[in-house]
Length: 469
Image (cartoon, rainbow, N blue to C red; front, top):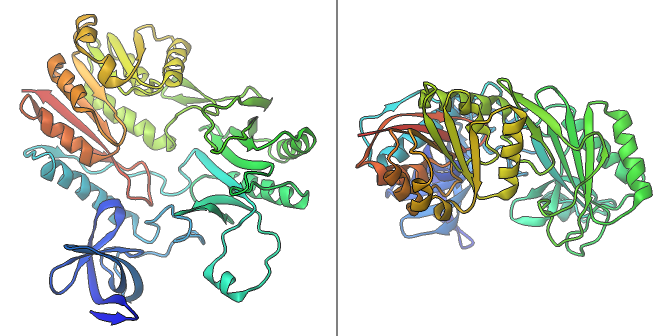
């Protein structure tokens, strides 16, 4: 270890694993843990310490002395800057290994569980261009590189359309390319940007809260039909019409084009009145014969193909015979509920978001499913003793909570309900493991299946099957 101008530099650190959020992990000669951003397991590096804690260092890589055998060349020119796809420099096979180990270790270490089957992680067929929804922001203050800043040149127009720089909300990376959504996503975004600059349309000023163009969202379905959503800060009918007509003429794939005028401090769309300029205002998606209506505010899994595999495996774990009553907690728009309903006697879904429940009811009607009932309310409040008394006992319970996992009161109610089988779908195996530990006196964990929904990132889903002891 050496010091340079008050900076602590650690030399010859071998990174041996990946920790929380995909950060590479190594140790000093004294055995102190070093968490390194910008590196991959297997690298031998010199690093600069950013934070020094009693039992670990947080550091950034400054030099690679020996490259990891798992290191690959990132595909995107913006890698390391935009904040997304942080594992583009790590082979996909190694990504899957790390995710599999993380889930397994969380279940054993946090959950204190043993003797369960761990199925091989279900990798994504597509490692790039797998997202069906992307959101971009307009800004008149394009993020400048350190080289550009130090050059003291006048860069003139600084309009940008892209992603927020991590930790700098007012700065936008002007995207030249993105490997997350297939064409014509990049072409539409670049066409909008160039048209706006060439025609003098004002890009949004975050600090001053003024401008015209605010955000752009692109959604697609599996049939190649596209939805385009603009958030505009003010009304400007003439320029709005010209821009929209330009896009519709250039991209016949656009099935519907919608917009809203949002002059709030934030760009959340859920409280906005969205207007339809072209088309029906929504696109349709099909999943194994089920139809889903996707509007500008709809929640729908962003990796369509892998979501379909997740639902198929959830149904497989539930192993329904047709006579069962199924509870679906945190049902969202009822996608899983309806996917399993064709194999069940009755499905009861509960969700806290009113718009999601309305969508679930609409989809059930659309799909001719009269055995689905949906309830709206805070989970720990509505899923109570009175609810259990007034509804049939569940044979199978499916739960798919947010990252924080289930509230302890919800777990207690599940134990009171005592279904024969629980299928727990999770996007955070750490909180899932915590919840499983609370149930291990009454339920045996039979098997788990990690599912990779988001290649090139550290995120991983997990499906767990529990049976009543």
